[in-house]
Amino acid sequence: MLEEAADEDLSLAQKFSILAKLTKLETVIKTAIENSNVPPVETRKLLKSNTPKQVRNTVVFQFIQDLFQEMGLGTLDIVKKKNFTMVLSNKDSPVQDLYYDIKKRKTCYVVADALADFFTEDLIVPSEVTEIECENKGDPNCLFRIDFQPLAVYRIAFDDIDEKIIDVVRQEEDLSKICSELDLLEDELNYRIDTLKSFHVIEDDMSLTKIGQTYYKYGKSVIDKKLDDFDPPWKIMSTITSKIADTESFAEAMCSSIDGLTIDDEKIEDSEVINLLEEAEQSTGFAQLVSKTFKENKDEKNDR
Image 1 (cartoon, one colour):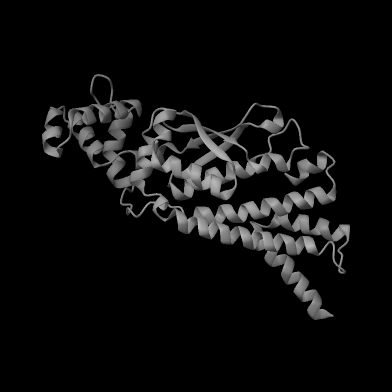
Image 2 (cartoon, rainbow, N blue to C red; image 1 turned 120 degrees about the horizontal axis):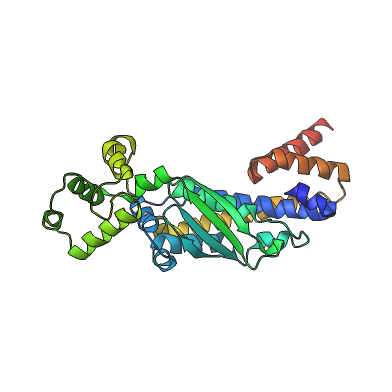
């Protein structure tokens, strides 16, 4: 992204400022994701949602919205939901403002990476995220398409009751007995059947599809569903918020220290700033970059 900025003739000072702000965001995002694991039972509700309204009503999506606000990444909303894809909008993001001078290009890769990491690591649904529209490119909104790995969706989306329904359908038995066996309301049974149909597990004629047959044959042995449930992250949101705040303060202090090197008595030359930018491209995150920078400064002072 810094190379793209160079193409737009951004000054060295602008590029360095962008770097400092992005590395701070990366650190905050990493802290948030490390502390936001979501129980599979909650992920399941999100995956089974068929419409934007249903997605908004899930606690996990409300948590994602709150988390992005806490990270300073703007406001998320759901635009479209299908079995294996979601489209989210992102407003008031500081990322696009960092590249306000760059036109006709998508610039919000930090938001895309944050979404991919959250769904992959915290919801246990490996995902790829693509920015399909960007305000800096001239689009009306910043939109992100999340593509879920289908196997991961099947692994999480179905619970023991769904598997029981699949088993009864496979044996061509009377589904009504499930209601009495599992103390299930008829409306919930019908909802689950409709969901299984939407995932192409059950045909309209109440037979198993090829996907359903494969799931029944291999699902219990290949698709690991022995995932321990634990307290959802929204129950400890205050703790997560506190950790984000601490991390942000640390990142700001580090960025200020680095910026300070350019204005105090020990000014660094343009070539040294360029070297720092090159180091950043080889660093996996803010912490590594800061560690490299201050180690080098310390070594130089020790050598004097």
